[in-house]
Amino acid sequence: MESDTEETVVITDDMVTERLQQNPLAYDKDGEMHYDIISAFIKSIRGSDPDGAIYWLARMVEGGEDPAFIARRLVISAAEDIGLANPNALLLANACFETLMKIGWPEGRILWRKQLSIWQRVLKAIRHTVPLTMH
Image 1 (cartoon, helix red, strand yellow):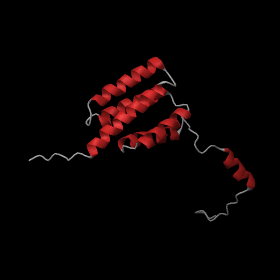
Image 2 (cartoon, rainbow, N blue to C red):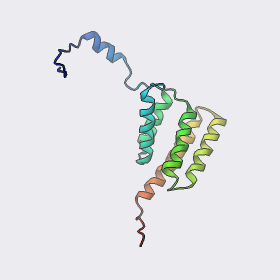
Image 3 (spheres, rainbow, N blue to C red):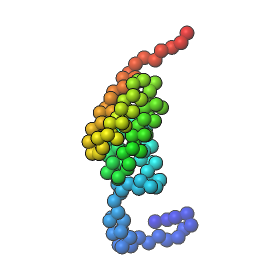
């Protein structure tokens, strides 16, 4: 293996064993991965990728992310990404946030699945409409 400094890199059995013991799907909710994963989650919503959105949501939930943090990001997404397509998106996001705070976890995941499903339909419907032209 070569590097920019032309130093020889030696990969030992111990190094390989150590790496194999690490979880590649680990979630560092206090580090950089925290922001990378929430960004991927929001981009999946914007891209109308329901499987992707659910995947990134599951990564955050399994990693122990604070449900209130995720709910706040969904409210922001409703305002920034979905709101022009469907003005009720912000109402839905706030209702889910409030209900999540009342019922707690793990039941709250049902709310998010429903919310994401509705938003995906809205965004897909908009992509299939003909844009209006102003004369």
